Image (cartoon, rainbow, N blue to C red; front, side):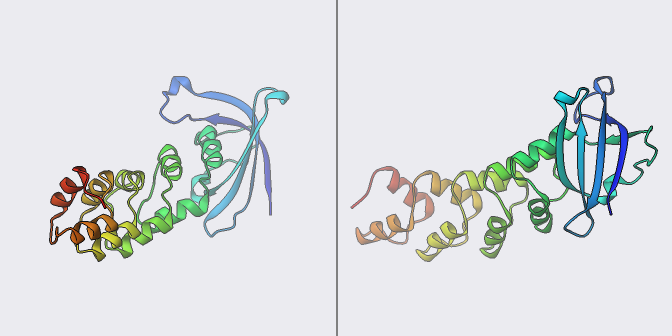
Length: 209
């Protein structure tokens, strides 16, 4: 069942003071969402027909509690520009649910966009956890991804004897170009049972085939 109402939209822009609030004429449409607890919210807003903008996204039903059915009433809504930005960057309800399932809840729109843009997703998080790593926050997730560290890299180093490395150590190893292949080459030259720091220094000195 669809609910359509004409309404005045009071747009509360994120991180803007009350004096910066803007009022515009528009229309909202609520439809049943694809996932439990979510509804599809579509907005049309703009002062003139030629400037009308549309955006549609899945939002938690609880966020719409108190939305008045009175067509002449004003109601509050989060920043539509943020919804558009999230949509443009591929942030959807499934992506948000993946992060929430991994324990990363209530992230602001810009943080969701940043995580998405840096290639962090549910599979990346799950693979890290299977390898024994549980990043404490989103920043560590993004940093780890940016340095090219993933579960596969951790396993490769573990297989050549570098056990129990932290994510910070893995990032340092990656930054210095340390690979499992290099560790094996070093061993073939007689450099065995070296610590991570010793291997990094050896790598920095240019030992190769």
